Image 1 (spheres, rainbow, N blue to C red):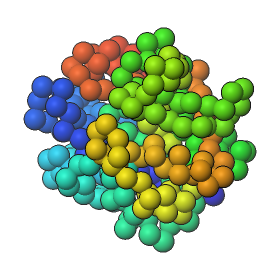
Image 2 (cartoon, rainbow, N blue to C red; image 1 turned 90 degrees about the vertical axis):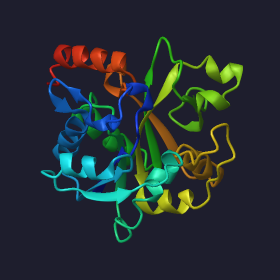
Image 3 (cartoon, rainbow, N blue to C red; image 1 turned 135 degrees about the horizontal axis):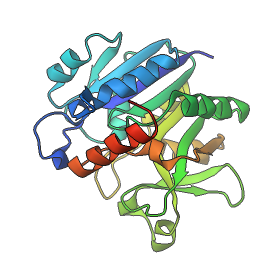
Image 4 (cartoon, helix red, strand yellow; image 1 turned 180 degrees about the horizontal axis):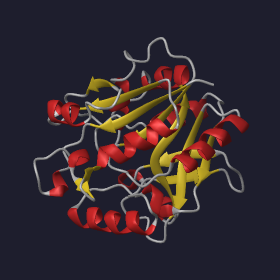
Length: 247
């Protein structure tokens, strides 16, 4: 099955206390985005699309040694809106689309291979990579059908009920989709939520309502899916990189 990868790298990263695009902040003297692109290359995809936005030309220049296509997200209206921008680059692509975040440098290509293999085995149209976290605050929660790999919904923290907030299985922001179904579902999502944004996770509920199989694959290493939003999280990521030999 052909594979395309979309890497979200449009964010400003306000909490990094810098005007530098978040994905260009450095861990061990390398921009975060390089780790994600190196991991992407290890999966031998047919195409990589980089979604750029804040200081787009700077991100484009910093990644110029990589063979990637770029798509501009301007203005930035959420994760679903980001992926919509890749449709033109993938209009004739048939296969699976892996979605990665440019600020999550710790995920390994081996975990991603397992995720894609699980997606195949389940004959899923959409699969989310998840992890159990002792303190899931700030993350979207994955609500499963009890005792199964099937997903009922993925709910953002700001939209979650008290019961949903008690769930410790979190959404990593890493997904595999059937390409045609992804872009078909993106045309149906709305901004009717607490953030007034297009949530990529709403694609899952659209798939589920239409009876299409949606699954969750859990990594046993929650460190892999950590995203970086603050200088403190960057320092912690550098520590984990040394520990897990990512550097």
